[in-house]
Length: 470
Ligand code: FUL
Image 1 (cartoon, rainbow, N blue to C red):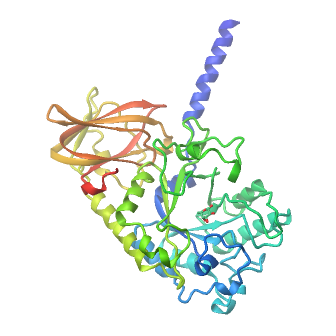
Image 2: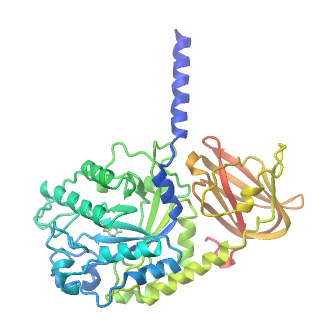
Image 3: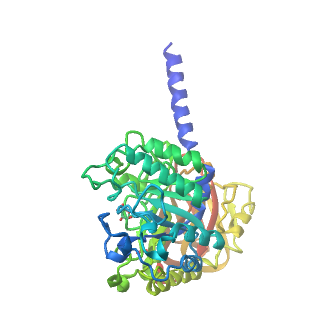
């Protein structure tokens, strides 16, 4: 009897572990991971009143862009190498950038284009034309709507989402802000999240939903744009709620190593101090170098980067921001174009599989994830000639899960070890930067993993010294 119990116990342990190891992304999440970096656009009455959180009592006439040009936003996004745009269709002030039938606080009531304007229409068209993904931020918190704070508001919110999903889709990502304050009647809303989620799944099953705790994508726990190190794509949401009931910011930042759901992190951060445009911040736009550093701390830790670039009162992306964005693009191109492993050879010390993995290195580091994985243990890369290296990039075949917890890389000059770097999680992409070493080969040691590791891409670069992560 005791034996049977022990066996049953062991089997269930094995089962639980196997279940954990099988946590993998959905197809939509996998595609989302590949979008890597895209723009956030905060635009609305706050742009004109110089506020960050409007009270919802602003007259609609304040919304008056003089030369709104969503095609200009898209051109700049493309030039900057971003893959999509997410727009604040409705911020906390409740103003709708589309003529919603469920509100009287919209572009229709403004004087812009004599009430015939529709920012969502213009942006969704422009995104489609330029091959950018179109995403929508919609704040459940509404400081204007008369029904807010009553069950009727949940109908309003559902209907607004339906309007957006059905009339402007495909919506690639839907962004639910966790903030929940009081409405015009002084009451907070009891959101019917289950119904909200069902609505999106019913009308737009391919849309990925962001909120603090998913269901598809989680908030990274800060608005500075950096993911945790390590960063797990797993999160346990049982017992947690959106907004104030969310897990600790530290948990959101790192994820849960043993989490049962695949809910990867997105790093939202603004190119300026504020989320909305304020002229006095024109001098405070982040530099290309700062943006590059954010890229290392977000994308380089396996998360996605959602970079906010707020249009000005004309309705155009300001010159100061576009210059920074293009500069950021140039730094990425300069850094990641010349993969030093192009001609390298790779092999396992203790196996006969010499050179079998060469395609991994040659394919190097494209954006489509390879469907084959190799194991890191004793993986050696032999360079054709000595190379100065200060950056190594790894990818895990995340469609098979995420397992790598700790690894190290030892660099050699001939047979002499000349340097070592350490890394934690890998996930969709891990970019390690370090003081340059001149090496003839290097060896990757897997120090700890939660299951079979599958590395699907590896590359090495010599990036400008000033860009090495501090
Ligand atoms: C927060 C909001 O309160 C900010 O205004 C901004 O929209 C940011 C992205 O999310 O919760």
